[in-house]
Amino acid sequence: MIGLLHPGDMGSAIGARLRDAGYEVGWASEGRGPATRDRAEAAGFTDAGTLAELVGASDVVFSVCPPDAALDLAWSVAAAGFDGVYVDANAVAPDTARRIAETVTAVGATAVDGGIVGSPPVEPDTTRFYLSGPAAADVATLFAGTAVEAVVVDERLGSASAVKMTYAAWSKGAAALLLAIEGVAEREGVDDVLHREWARSLPDVADRLDRAKSSAERKGWRWVGEMEEIAATFGAAGAPPGFHGAAATVYRRYPRPT
Image 1 (tube, helix red, strand yellow):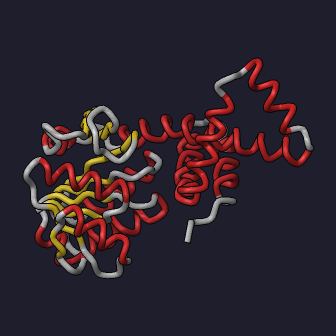
Image 2: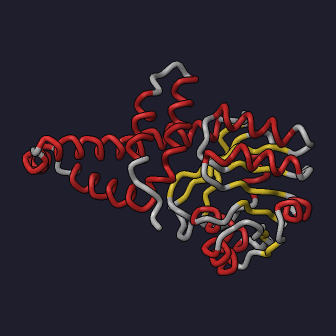
């Protein structure tokens, strides 16, 4: 069985594609809310009840969770004595990915670093699942023939996370910058003038701003931790971390929808 922790929007879609490939996919309902249960049941996942039961029955475990929970989740899996293949598919800094790998390999598991780019995979050509580590190629074969394009980066743990961090640094970081610019223009009472100038000289900006607003209202709260991980990635590389520390502040203004 393949274990999935936890079936949110992206995780449930990844798990559904594994089901398409013929694998049994399990999840742990203990402590999860009704929305998660609905997604898991709709995708046909097997409920193992507890995390310990799930990892005990699984050969491979995929972790797909908010980045600020990724290390704690790895500790929980390690504490359960998991000795299979642990795929961390979260938006974390390369150093965080390596700490996660150290956590699970200390109890005998094999670590694979993963980074997902794109939307939840339903149709082909929408989602790339970047993988790195010595067992990355083995994990990639699980998605053969599915809508997920699994891409092996190299055998270094942290490389797939580096791809995710540098990609999102632009896509979500630039969106946060636009939102901040719009806020300043509104505060100064020049947003209408700015919009007219954009229409003349940067005609694509208006659409990008609309998309940024829509995305932030739906899931900006989820990107706070991701921006903080990107800031840590930049800092570790000797680049200024302030860009994405500021982006985290922007997204913190968008609370989780009730």
